[in-house]
Amino acid sequence: MALLIPVGDLNHETVRLEGELTAEELALDLNDPCIASRQPMRYQIVAELMGPEVLVQGDLEMRLDCTCVRCLEPFEFVLRLSPWSAMIPLSGEDALPLVDEAVDLTPQIREDSLLALPQHPVCRPECRGLSSQGLDSMKPQGSSDDLRREPSAWSVLDTLKLD
Ligand SMILES: [Zn+2]
Image 1 (cartoon, rainbow, N blue to C red):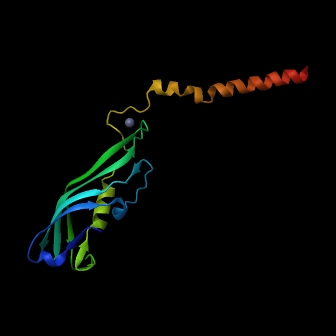
Image 2 (image 1 turned 120 degrees about the vertical axis):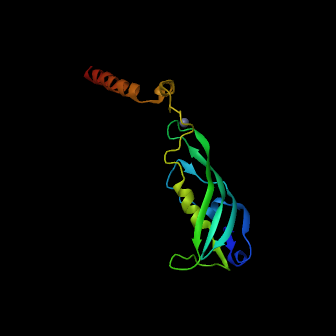
Image 3 (image 1 turned 90 degrees about the vertical axis):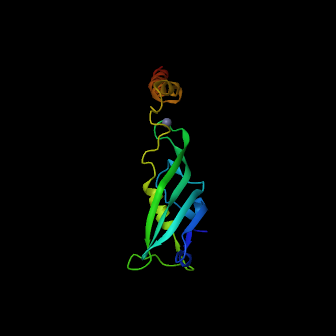
């Protein structure tokens, strides 16, 4: 189910909606390998008719699985659009098409969520990334030692050949 506002009901009342949009329904087009959207977005909204438009206000919240770009540790980022609001035109060129007498808020929420994504997700503001100690401990896997050893191995072979 997408997030649908029944427009007919707005003629005589404000509409309150509360629920979840799954990651599949929201289908965020994440162009970032450091961010994954697997958990549902929770919403709590109130919609009311304002002339030819629907004013929607509320709170949106979703947890994203991120990888810190500095230390590469996984962490959870809470994306919060609060307060969130949108004006949905019902007539004119920008009017949203009605589906079963309802407007679908999902595209608007998708767009606003993408704009609110962290540009460079970091686990905490003061994260300094891999510490110098961490880099040192990775050295045995590094190739600097191997590179130094390799030529000497060849020179040993050379001397053997010469003999
Ligand atoms: Zn970090």
